[in-house]
Image (cartoon, rainbow, N blue to C red; front, side):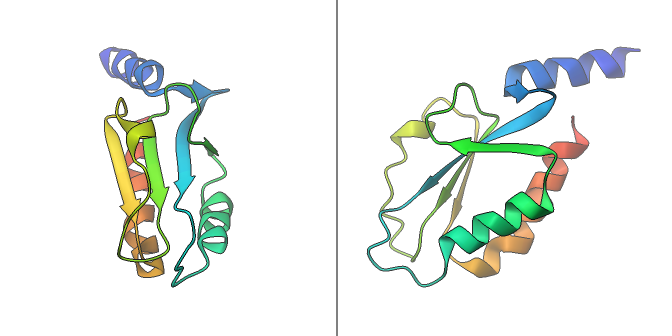
Length: 109
């Protein structure tokens, strides 16, 4: 089916590990955190076991996720220069929106 071929191309272009889409995660330096960034990402791990979350230096991630502890968003984004989909989180209230984006990514798999 043509649709299956499209999905396979998405998986190949997006970096998969054992069939899981790779998401590179980077944290800011944590100088002024307004929320617990580690808990935020742990909740993502629990909510999306079908995704492969890894350090920012992972090869060919499908998405770059940068977690900043405050609105300054001072994290270095150079790690994501070759990643098409970039997401910046600066507040724990963004969890639901991020979940919607990840669900959308999964629906294309």
